[in-house]
Length: 137
Image (cartoon, rainbow, N blue to C red; front, side, top):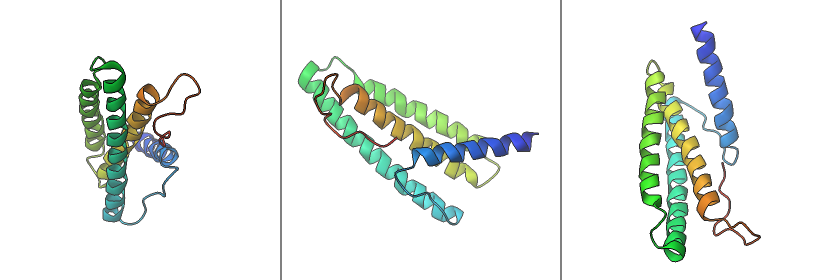
């Protein structure tokens, strides 16, 4: 039964990761090739998040001074991502899939965070175009 539950968890994780990565091709090949591919995707997602955070902070500084504390929120989010995806890594500690599962977790959360930053700080409530384009989820 535990094996069936694990297989279903892997399948659902791969399905949801596939939906989240619809804008880029999946990582295939050997485990090292998949790890390298996921590393590149994560680097790109982190760079996009940094770009959106910088634009959000610039808007906050321009419009509100320092009242919204995006830096503290981001620090807390980084801590959360580390713990959450570290747990995924530990859960899959019995196999080589653990590094890929952890990277998929980090990629999914990073893309979600980028979208949250965009929605909260870089869009407007009226028909004014957003400061940056909507990021992929």
